[in-house]
Amino acid sequence: MAVSRDSAAPAPRRRGVVVLLLLALAVVTSALISQVWTRLKKIEYGYKISKASKENSGLLEINRRLRIEVALLKRPARIHRYATEELGMSAPRPEQIRRLRVRTSSVSSVSGEGGEAKRSVAASAHQEERRVAASAHLNRGRSQR
Image (tube, rainbow, N blue to C red):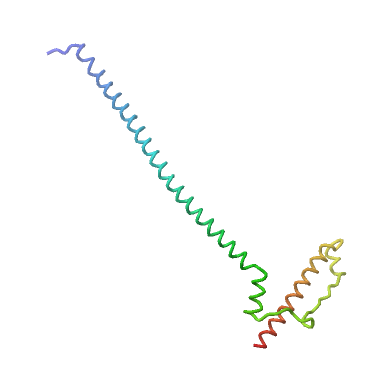
């Protein structure tokens, strides 16, 4: 049995076509899988964004309520009422107020003209006066109880 050259040639050609078709099928299949995977990820991230947006809205509402509460707690009338009714505080009497004297000569050596430094020291002195008066008032209030 002799094999002719004509019948031997088509076999390798068919094998090449089959390999090419399998390769094309693999490319199309991977493209389809990639497309499906991309759409699934899009849906997943859409849900995550929706959840984060709802959480953000909730946190913004909590923040708004807390800001309102802070504003209500900072009201001077509320603080005054709390200080007088709950803590027993009152305005200091004139004899409870202590005035501090600031030497301006030491202040002017800190700063060239001394204007800003003098204002800073004066503000600190004023704060110290208020602190001393409040402390004296608190101590008096505690000793009366």
